[in-house]
Image 1: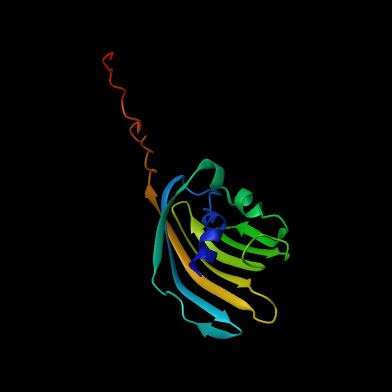
Image 2: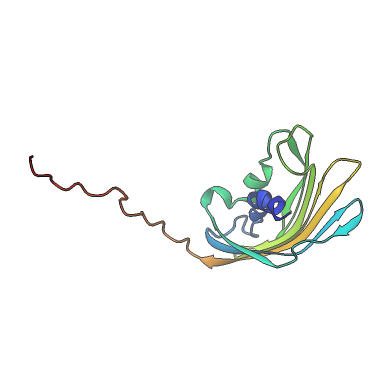
Amino acid sequence: MKKYLICCLPLLVAAAPSSDKLKTGQWEETVQNMVMQIDGKNTPTDSKTKSVLHCVTEEDNDPRVVFAKTPDHCKNSQLEIKGGNFTVKQECSPEAKVPFHQMTVKGSYTPTNYKMSYSIMAGPAEHPMTISADTTAHYVGACPVPTESPDATPSATPQSPK
């Protein structure tokens, strides 16, 4: 079920600061308190706290831009971002190629940290599934500079004429 959360990270990462933007650079995000219910009954989950590092760039640090983006056949039915708080509700039709049909995210933020709670509704009507969790994140520093891998091709050695 963690894959449901991973698919939503671009949306969840977008929680932005009261200055309207997250600080660009590397962030550590932690997902905890995950609860999954199928047919209204709690289902065991891997309840370990999961942390991931990711880089926030100039392209994905503005919440108005990131939250406004939706996959095909999805729409934001609620989008409020102001005063250090945000609420986003996204709804998707069955044609959407996402593993949920409704997601609600609520939280608060500063330029260097954010916290949010979210609920994802998925599954067919006869077996509804709800996943909820809390996420916290904080700015770590500059993103690591990618290093080029050494040339993998062996160097040519001159061959003597035969």
